[in-house]
Amino acid sequence: MHGSRISGVGHYQPARILTNEDLAGLVDTSDEWITSRVGIRTRRIAGPDEPVDELAAHAAAKALAAAGLAPGEVDLVLVATSTAIDRSPNMAARVAARLGMAAPATMDVNVVCAGFTHALATADHAVRAGAARRALVVGADKMSDVTDWTDRTTCVLVGDGAGAAVVEPCAPGAEPGIGPVLWGSVPEMGHAVRIEGTPPRFAQEGQSVYRWATTRLPAIAREVCARAGTDPADLAAVVLHQANLRIIEPLAERIGARRAVVARDVTESGNTSGASIPLALAKLVERGEIGTGDPVLLFGFGGNLSYAGQVVRCP
Image (tube, rainbow, N blue to C red; front, side, top):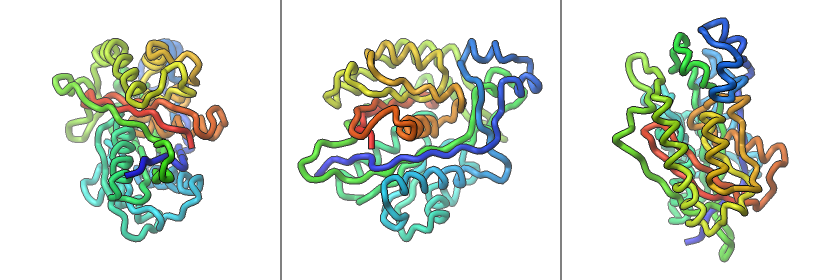
């Protein structure tokens, strides 16, 4: 059994930009109110003719191109999403069909905001065990579909988008490029972030989530680094779930990542749920803010009050 690595990343966002000023025309809010509480200035919103699988397929195609692979060379597709309206076919099957893949295994992973890091760990395990040769892991969500646009506490948060990564085996003897996952949940607080009802609507208990994230998660994130044998001070970047800038900044500081680039994509993309981590990671790579081989902490948390994190090497 050999380790695995990320060989390419990609991202995609819809063209429409929704600003804080635009939202002030919909609900009782303002740019100052939003930025002071969550740090978000803009977000991207998909149109009615842009389903989740289309967002996912665009990001996936970019990741495959970055890895130098054709769609037919992938034998496992995992899509992390919590906004798939249809139960079947799943988003992974639809993405595979859009990309013209031959016969991959296709699975959706619904762990909401921590979905991508759960799916990445699953792909790592499959490649390590020889159950898959190459895996495509996508985080994609269309949060605008499940948002109550009259609720100023939640509608100011959300955005739509997708990010993707290609996972391949490491060469024999090479150091793994995806470190051990640390994952878990707090079931008794699962109600704190939810998408439920008919039609489904996103709701959360913001103060409970904030207190839990800022007090409990730093120690968990440091344990992720310990399992990877990485000192937090040596991290080149920290990519946390892009929920709220007021959570991201203190959490990164308490982890001890003193020299790391901290992803702050939430300011321009909003909370894109399962898409937020790969979206932010792909942008850091695209802009050259991190380089090949750099250690990066990925850490997702949110819905179900689930969490999952691992240290990866930048492709």
